[in-house]
Figure 1 (cartoon, rainbow, N blue to C red):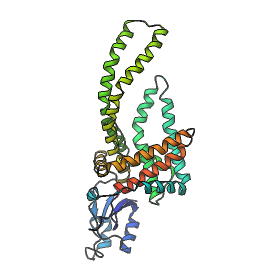
Figure 2: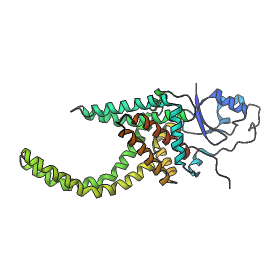
Figure 3: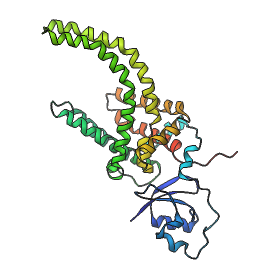
Length: 331
């Protein structure tokens, strides 16, 4: 059965829904001939009346079943303003976890177990790099599936812990690129630090290669290496500024890919445009989510099993505000 996404009369996106749902909403007047729909797997939005599978609904009827509903083209939501209620996102994230504790706990646990197992295997000599590559490939689709599960729960739609793997089925390639490309671009900001550190360490490495130091000499080298790193620390701190700026700007790339089926580049651009309307608000929320998770780690690390789903819920409520269409304000 074909699945669709639809822009409703409230200018919000719904789906995936079945053709029977669309027919029901047409009969109830919630949709009309001009309502914008997107077939699953397609990237183009079309008016409902142009889809041949609904020709019988509109046959012999006026172009509009009722007065046209206020519908914005899908690209126009990028131009709408928003106000991010950080406190509201936190309280709703907490309520979401309370009301869906079993689902969100198990789904988050699955994610943590997979990432934790890969991290452990990545330490094994010889085969460790292979697991690091595996993690690079699956991290985006896996995280996208986690976001998908949370969004389903937020919207009151059917959700299960198995949705953690939905990214592999719905948008594997785009989620992989949506994770890899922003990470690489943000990582480029560290190049000056790497160059400065390398320049300072090259003489030390050359000395070690030209001699055979004993254990006492190696111990004496540790303070030297530590001092070298500390002298490079100001460069690292400067490099982190643009890196953080980029990461916050692309914060909603993966949710946009899994939710709106956008290409990774379109999702990066959309996230960038929306976040930079109120960058400091999004940054403040990201810092608070990070502090929540740090608090969980401090509780013998077990607390992260509870704070991480709360933090993800907070983040997805922020996504709903920043990246979901809303009615423009009057006046």
